[in-house]
Image 1: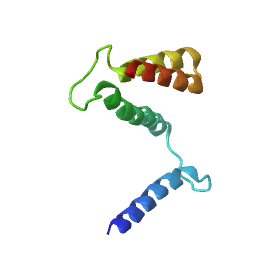
Image 2: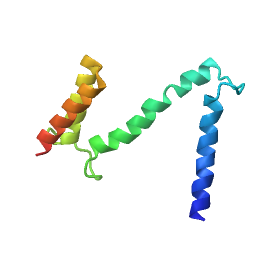
Image 3: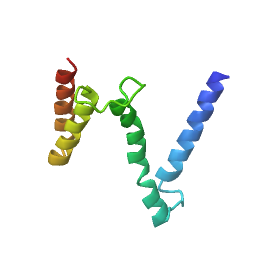
Amino acid sequence: MIWLTILTMTLIIFASRYLFLDPRLPIKLNYQTQWFLSYSSPAVLTAIWAPIVFLPDNKTIDLTYTNPYLIGAVVAALIAWKTKNVLLTAVISMTVFFIVSL
């Protein structure tokens, strides 16, 4: 039953992605739908990083200067904003995170 569920979910995800990626299929989204979907990536990424940064112990919100996740996220945001370089942002923010978490 587990394998059937995995295969079914794989087919559903593949089909939903394929319908929008294959240029031969006559599916075109209107401007409003494209604009609405442009917010899906930031929303998903925020749902991933926000609990990690603000709830490091999974119990209480930690907004103190001793939270290495918060410091690393702030450094990453500032470096990304100033340099717009993904590699530099990742390396420096991870280095700051590891130094602070020691």
